[in-house]
Length: 158
Image 1: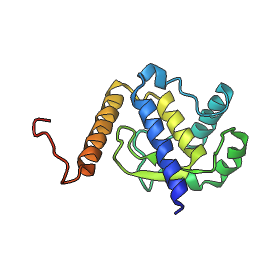
Image 2: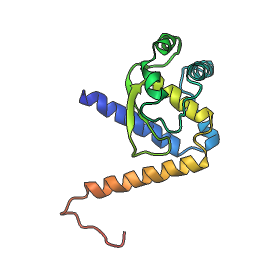
Image 3: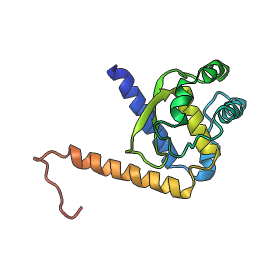
Image 4: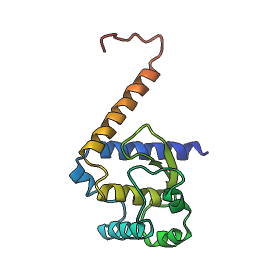
């Protein structure tokens, strides 16, 4: 795996999660992923027409998510969608409410369609955003604890 690509993918994922976790459900519902609002509407319609039953809140292995990435019909639709870097592999959080959970690498256009559906369908309600923030806080705490060296004094009252 190319380390530069991995660093860019991680930075992209972290920036999106940070933006998401600092937004209200009303603001999240207005997130735009494609070049224009028309692009978002078309992408969402195409996605749901092809995958009407896909649960986007929790994308489980072995479900339509795998079919989504592999689907030849979908691949013929992708060129109609305007998305910069649409073919770059991007980490998709399997669980919309978790920062530290598993991720699946999917083309950015697939990631954008799933995230667009999550935003449009209200997956990111107050409860889910609170869980996402808590997961993010836990990740930051774990990272801070993990990166503390034994020679670094710590305050036991923290």
